[in-house]
Every structure is written in structure tokens, then in C-alpha cells.
Amino acid sequence: MNEKEKIINGLNSEKVASDELIELMLKNIGSLCPELRDNTIYIGWVNLEESNKISTKQKLWLIDGILSRNLLFYGIKEQYSDEVFTRSFVSLLLVVLLESHFKNRYIDAETEKEIIKLSIEYMETEKDNRGFVDEKGWAHAFAHGADLLETISKSIYLTPDSATRVLNCISRALINIENFLFGEESRIDKVIISLIKYNKLTQSKLNSWIESNNVSLMESKSFNLCWVKFLMSLSYMLKFEDIEFEETQMLITEYLKFFYSTFEII
Image 1 (cartoon, rainbow, N blue to C red):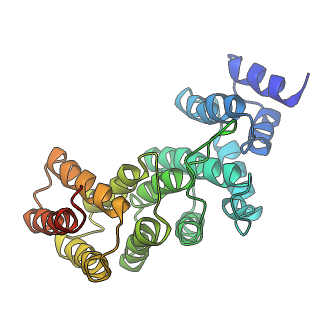
Image 2 (image 1 turned 120 degrees about the horizontal axis):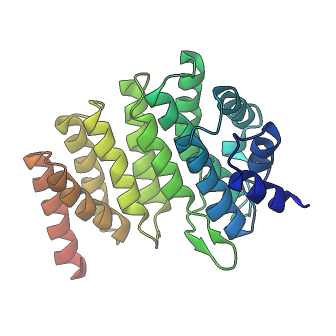
């Protein structure tokens, strides 16, 4: 029986997850087989957590493995390499582990702070903006990384300085990296909404950040559809979440009007 078959059989079992299964799933987390990586291992983490088939000891082992092996930065210096699948899906595993922790705390404070620190550093470093990769499936590093930033925004240990760094990560992604094709902007918007909901971002600070980016892009007359999509999505998300940030909406409209008058599209 090969490793893929062992993972599938282990996840289909009614029994609690064995240590061997957990180890094999982490070992193959960046598999280039999209069926194994996306539909088996990632969904497997979610199902194990929801069905209480993974122990606290195993979750702590996973966190230790991710941190000690530096998996969030695996192959990050290589340009458009297959190692992105490991980084991207480790981000999603951390989301599962952190969400579990927020429901029933099991991670010590120092480790939680370390996860926050490394998550931000990862999104300050990632360069692979590919979404769907032919024959290999979803890389989606910035979307999954945004999911991780959204999750750490819920932590009581996310400081105001860290929240500012999160905003800088978003600016970098949308303005310096950009060229996203698969809805990454809306995933990034969810970070903003979460920061607001968990009292890590005021309207005043959000406005200052948006205005700074607006001015920079307007002065350079940069054709940046990512910022446009981000602002449009943010506008509606704020409305749908009943967040009445009227000044923010005005800044969004101001930039969209500029972009339309300059490039005649939205």
C-alpha cells in the first residue's frame, strides 16, 4: 500500500487518526497531485477537526513540525517553483489549527505569538502570485495567506504594530505583486473585515491607509486593477457586514472615479 492509499484509508476509517496518518498527511501536504492535496489532505484536516478525530497532542505535533521545519518558507526563494504548494497549504492547515485553538485553547501564548510573527513574515516575503496552475491545481498562495492573516487577526496577541504590518502586507500584495486572476482581492478584503470586527482596525486608521495607497497610485497614474477590485469588494463587504464606515466609502468612490476618468473602465 502506497502513502496515498494509506492516507485515504486512514481518513475513511471511523477510528481516531493515528500518528502515522497525521505524519503522512503533513509529509504530503504539498503534493503535486491536486486530488490528494486539495480534496483528500486539506479536506481531511477539516474533517478530522470537526469530527474530533485528531488529538490535542497531534495538533501540537503539527504546529511544532511546521515551525521547526520552517514550512511556511519552504522554497520561498525560488521563483515560481512547486514548493509554493507546500507553503500555501501549510497556511490553510494553520488556519484549521488556529480556529480550533480559538474555540478551545490549547496553544501556549509564546507559540501563538510565534505563529503570528511567522505568518506576517511569510506574507511579507511570498512572491508567487499564481492562482490555478495547469495540471497541478491551486497554488493560490496569496489567497491562502490572506486566510491565515484573517485568522491571526482574531488573536488577543495581535498587537497594533502587527496589525499595521498586516496592512503593509496587503499593500505589497495588491500594489507591488498584483496581477491576480482568481479573486484573491476578495480573500484579502476578508482580512480587513476581520481586523475591524476584532477591534484591531479603526475607521481612521483604515482611511489613512487607503488614502495613502490612493494618492500613490493616483500620482503615478498606475493601471492597477487589483486595487480597484479590492476597493469595490471592500465597499460591498462593509455594507453586507453592516459596518458603517461612510468616510471609507467616500475614499473608495474617490479612487474609483479617478480610475474611471483616467482609464475609462472599472
